[in-house]
Length: 233
Image (cartoon, rainbow, N blue to C red; front, side, top):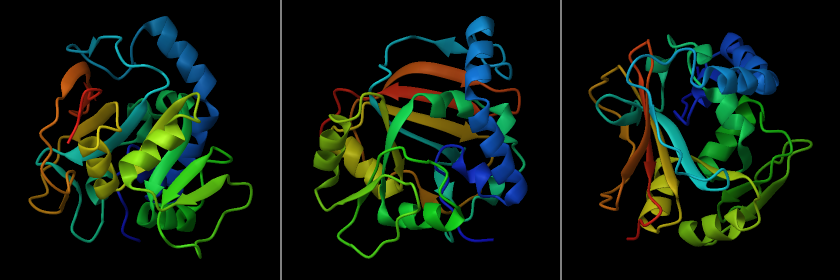
């Protein structure tokens, strides 16, 4: 199994063909799940303690990913095997994807996403890199940029009517937060402690983090959504 980055629920998709099929089915069922959630008013898998405060916009810039209880995105070799026992159906991935209009990511995340099989169709995607020899999947809308991360995020976001997903990796997310270019940090803390690995933050971040939403799942995971709109370096 190739090393992977734990960026939101993509990790389930690339944890083998079975996981990939589950993700594709979830994306295909976005409309039905969105309707069901609207009727229910919450995730079917959320338990007591769910707290939702409508405060972030559908057109904001969101960095969204899963981490371990002890703060790691993945193991030192990039493995996210600790996530494989949590089915994607237990979370709100399809609903999340429904609101995404474009993606921005570093070159390592992009190369891995292409190798796994590009799953984002023609959603506009910006790759932060100085390289110009990277492959472009058929039908994908890819553009490359060597701008500083905060500037690239702001520029791309201004052209995106829906949410811009800061897909990864950790350096891109850290630089985006420190530069005040990310509006929302959406982290799902998994009930797993791996002891060592690659941390979420590449360096210290002391910007404001206002907790605006929490969801406790029956499997022990907790989703924490922070508003970082006033974050500056």
